[in-house]
Amino acid sequence: KKMGKKAEEKRNRFKEKEAETALERARKLRDGKKWVEAESAYRLILTKYKGTKAANLGRKEYLAMTADPEVKSLLSRAKKLKRKCEVWLEIGECYLKDGRPNEASKYLRKVIEAYPESEYAKTAKEKLER
Image (cartoon, rainbow, N blue to C red; front, top):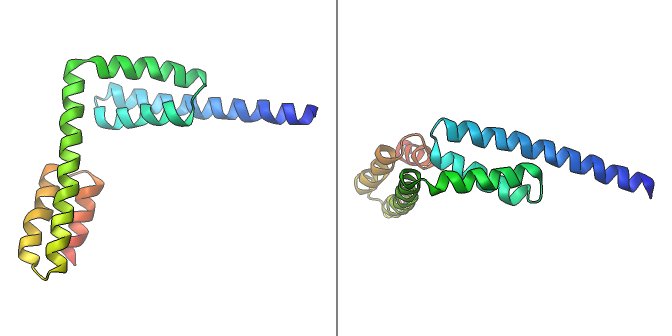
């Protein structure tokens, strides 16, 4: 039974260390004004490392960050743009399946222009290269 308790303590220390590392990453993103990535990093901490000291600190930092009107506005616009990219990719895919590559290209290029460094743009480029 003693070994079980030691193993649990070790697991908790490991989880806390992981949470601290994740919090450092979120802070770097926040300090670099990479708001969308920072928001995702903080949300991960709040869910995956719930109950840790780092998650409690992260929650306060996340709330402070998202309380800033400018950040809140940027995050809102980013979410809308993300949804548009998803829709444009779907439309592009439909046109490709329908044998209309010129029409598909218009929508796939919209994704690349709107969100050039994203996974969406990467997917759109792959579809254009086919």
